[in-house]
Length: 187
Image (cartoon, rainbow, N blue to C red; front, side, top):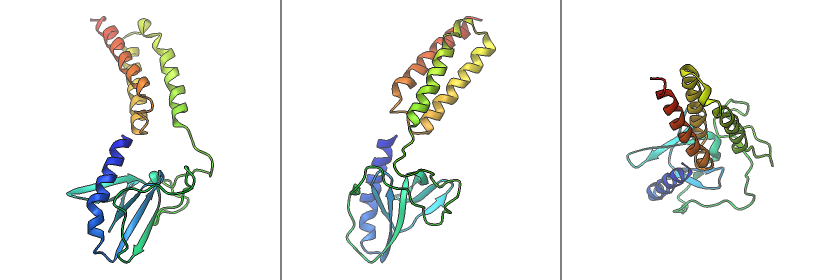
């Protein structure tokens, strides 16, 4: 998922950069990973900042945006994403138009990086321990457990951790196969 975002951002910069050379003002959207995106306008939809890209639009979550700055003039723009110098974990700043205490503002202190992987791994271990009981479960229990696994898998994928937890996702699919076989044995 991350590679897709980077590829889209890379394409957006290449397609949008020449259009900005003739403009008097533009916006620099700095991402938390250090990349920069240049655009002549942007807007907010839900928890995303969106901007035009070729025949469509690109959306970036506000949690992934470090800051947005407006630039005047026709300065030369970089043709590719640049990494910001300095620390590998930049400080979070408020996005223009976003209140500091709003629900979408990232709440992170300097030097503290949450590890969603450890949370997901712990939850996966709980599901794995419950999986041992599949041979003794009834139809209703199997259906409920399958839904639990599906919710967990979707939560991991929506958090963008599918690549980091690919082995666990594959194991969940194997668990689905065993659950399906057990479910079919009731018929």
